[in-house]
Length: 357
Ligand code: M6R
Image 1 (cartoon, rainbow, N blue to C red):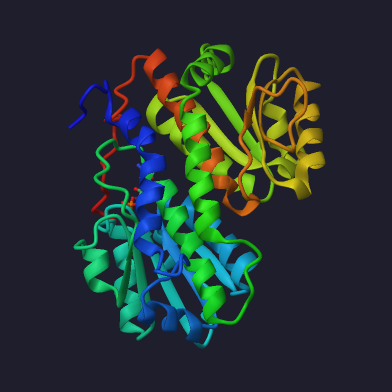
Image 2: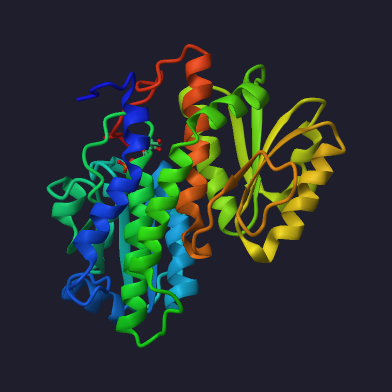
């Protein structure tokens, strides 16, 4: 039930800190360490490469997951769009583990890959919000995201909890393989949940930024580097899906290879800066578009902020920054849809779960 909320999307965005805390409670053992079931851990330990397969927002979570698996656990990982996988299959390693990410667990494109992978005899894990779903039943293992029912077509809390579970998975895989993790993921996830709450409480600010940057635009660009690039892909998908503003997320360095031609006086560009290694390069990308007339909305994180930034996010561990950077982009999409009179919870032409290929 929506309760006092006008839209499920707003309710579900607000529920995100609680959802992260819930999943944390489910995955923390009595020693206060995150842990996944032993059979899943064993499968991850035996794998020489992890192939993540998903669609849409879940694919965007998969990109963050791939990054976490490689950087935190030292496991080779790839993320693939399910609808492309069968037609453009990668060469498989000797002992692959397939990870399907799906809020609904019913997405036909992902299921098509799962069926094929099972025929090939490889191990499969589904990360889903619906444990009894088709993808969950048909995979060898399941990790539940504990987001609670997500009704709005636009995925919000399902996405952030997928990232939360992927962080838990990556850290546990690291331990299983004897790789030392430099941070306490349980603690950092809990701090990230608190930080999400702080951002969520800045609704008025986020609403006014939408008014300032997006109220009269037909299009919008999102730029980021490293992990922020993945957040930009998700921010753009969210915006176009619910507000019908044409949006594109791309890597800051790709600007000059084509997209910059689209920048003109007043074009809104949302730039995200949460990753220390690229803090200078994303700023210079922002300058490049400002010089061509773009209206840059800079979202940074404490420690990397500069005077004039539109929004400064509270500090969280850099590996978990996607959790918090995603939040304002979700709210941007929500308020933009509201201003434009769109049906926020049920955007045109879309279904919550896409059960045809
Ligand atoms: O249920 P799934 O996670 O498998 O769904 C995948 C996509 O259809 C879904 O994430 C879609 O992109 C969302 N509507 C985006 O908000």
